[in-house]
Image 1: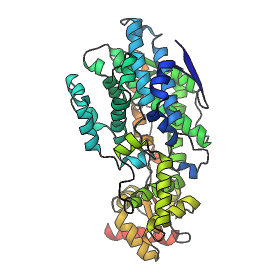
Image 2: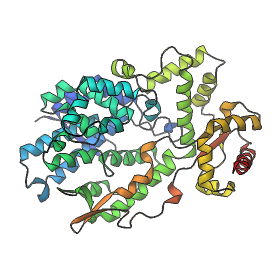
Image 3: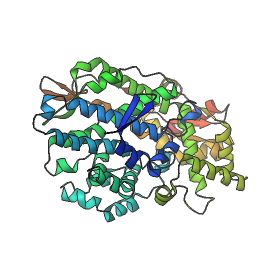
Image 4: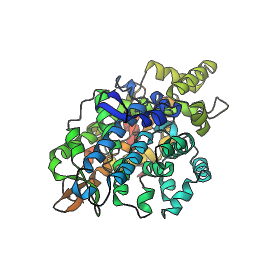
Length: 457
């Protein structure tokens, strides 16, 4: 079968069979991902962070295909399945890997808050996805637990790619199921390899995470990650009862992966200026809703208008120009000129040093009362309210808690890295809130907040 090779800066040549190119890649719905940055506004901190959901999707496809082909060489994996059956499973996985992020709206997670999840579920119900899950005996759990971009991705898959998928012998409903972490064929009593394929795309060791951690580290230039991706990929194994796991032959690589994933979280997405840049962009979108007739991001805008980051930046520019005295205009100027405030602490060490209080309780108090505290602190400091921000990291998938659930296969059994004792106390790696204030007011802001906290407790 003819194939296309695309050179990727992370994985080298990515090879795709021509039907995948014709039916998925070279379509407007998929090409839109070239205009959706993987890390939204983090390029204001790491200038190289301009990589997009497009190349990430290619990377996930490449890793998923490589892992599955490696598994096909293992005796447990092929002993009770024919080559044709495994080919069918692999093609469904490949299509799902390519399409897993097709529903990301402009600015990715920042834009998700504007998507109407109930409307998305209703539209998916109209297209029969809910019925397909019920018929397989799964119920509504997949759709109820899905994120907005996953729901939108399923809708785009069913609306834009159904004919192309079916021409390749792939069930569009099963592609959606894989994106949500399920396999309809497996749930219907099919071969256990169907379930493993879904785990490759959606589990504690899925290739989605493996790609974006590697890619984000490389493209930002942060260089806080050092592990052998090829050896990690080669360590995947599977068993009918245990499912997908990593074998013990790559323990050193797995250890580096654990540390690296946390490092990218701590020093890229949880970097205090990254947090501010992305929160500022999110606030700009919120302000935009107050000065335009239509919501800045809608389901139909993505479906029919193929809106991306560039579309929204132009809308912000025009709105700021047409409303020069608005908060939006002030925030837009700050964003475009990169005039960032100071933070009262930059990392957990400074946080512990400067806050004379129980840090967990103080952090919870800040986050739970952020709006009121921002207003009160702005008044105390004598600055406009939009000059004070209390925020935490905006990137949910980088939260490190799930790392302890990574399964390791050894001696005929599978246990998590937590059970094996490979994942200890990670107190330093937990996220902290940041308080951003005008330059020169950091000490006053910190002492004021600590005093207020003690007064209430």
